Image 1 (spheres, rainbow, N blue to C red):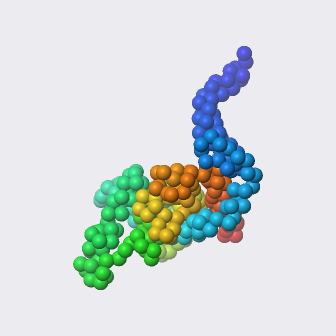
Image 2: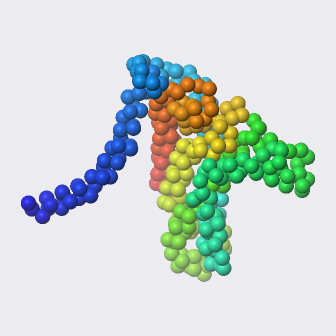
Image 3: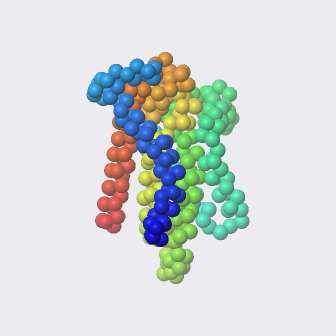
Length: 299
């Protein structure tokens, strides 16, 4: 056996476990979904081929399209808070001062804590009757009566704030990595030329962070559109569907018992909803990627 062929066999053996896991945990479930979205299948062993009926139902399903709108609102609000705040924190913590490593760890800590734990803590804090948030606002006279943070008027705002709080540390760390790759000589040259801190930020930091920021925003868009865990813990999509997002709606179709949903398990229709949700997320991500690439060519 030639050395080249031996190396090919050795590489193939090293890759084999990863290929098997990818096939078992990635490809097979995908094929399962692609098959059952054409069936009326409720998980009891009975399969009834219905063709495109699941998709016809999908286009008439107001609950699903309401969840799409809620997803866009949730993702937009989360991005509007997370990206600027994480960039600001990264810039501040990139400076040299005593205790910066401790502050980096503090802001990054929510990323490694379970989403369920974070959601339970914030559910207690935002409780309308004895939550600390209302108590402090009443104490300082900022409100005259307790606010129902999980009511129809404020539920979406509350879940956006909690989700943003949990995500800021992750993107802050990515921005920090990008900032530390910018040569210090550029800032020294700008300082010699008379540029102030604000001018250096807009003329050096932001352009040099462009490629990193493009990737960070794409990751943030995907995570925001697919996020539902904190909503499931705090509101379960309520009240009256105000915080029902796509993947929470999908979860309720596939696992109704765990969410307390009165709807029976619908694996066939849930597969169609999952496919449509993935197409929507992919389309939005592709649109952002196209626009960001186009802006790079312009500027």
